[in-house]
Length: 486
Image 1: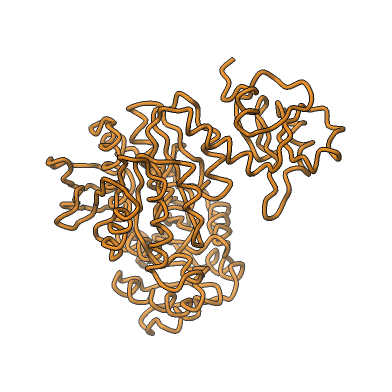
Image 2: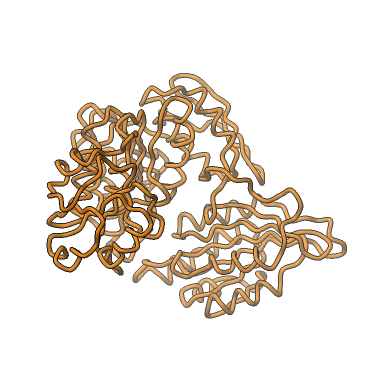
């Protein structure tokens, strides 16, 4: 049996004590009693909403090989027959296991942060590094105080490349996580006004992202967006943190990985870049300039960890957008179809602008009889904007007008500011709630339309996407195939 962790090594790493007849090892690490697989260890962490100790019996029923619980909860859980490792604090124990996983591997480690594009960049790295070795990367957006140590703890010892996403919405969140990850290469995709309500200004956001430099190993590298206004600030911060090698990407003439030309289409794009003194043509299987910009950082990282650059470029041709992050659906309606661009996972001012630009490149179907298809932006609130909320929502009017979007459908209290900022030439529909807008959307779309749905996750625009996919059948041979998305 190939163990992820032997029980002996796990106990030593997490400073635990055994209770019951422990197995020789475990095949995985889980914090979710519903999805745990037989043979895995269940860490009963106490989260913001639920306490894993309350679900230990379900984890046991689903095949947990052992459970990790806190000393304080042992008296109440002694009746459970599953073997146990008892620790002072379960989340702290998971963090210790993550640190041990990092220490025992010879893998080259890349960490990714930024206001926009973290998960996309992480998944691009997973794909582009895979032809060169065994890749371990965090799943979904596991980028917080439990997601990062969990992702580390799950890293096999024989990993060749480890890729970890690190997120934050307050200062001093990235620093302890990057010190766990200890990356050889750290990427900051860009700095934008995400979580602006928790900061005084965008420079404070940049400073919080710059905490990633504190974990970079001696002799390591950082890759920064040269086109971003915060580049100079971040470069100084990296050097001040002792980072020895600072690299850049973007269209800027001095960028180390420079975007020379970009051609966009609805489904994919092509870019030409200069890297390592060479010019390369790169075909991307997903559309959007923001995806191309992230690809520059990815290929820079591939080169720095000495993976195969040509194979990485080939792998980018197979990219597909993921659910909630630009995935496209063609659904049958009337005598034709409409196109749905699902951007419902999250939103901030920068990602909103990128999604609006993506909509602008999407051509409505003109072959629908007397009426031309429409480009429709279906937008909801961007959360955590604080005192800036009205301003940043109203400011979306400019990008919408520049993109030629003539139909804007809105929901949420903050988007009222955008409604009021748009001129009469734009056909605006506004509803107070997501549910009201969903009902309007379902009854108002027509053949040839292109709909782009985007809001912060908490607004629940995923319900609009789900309702559209449920009501309208797939247009033949157009639905996304099973793949590892962005």
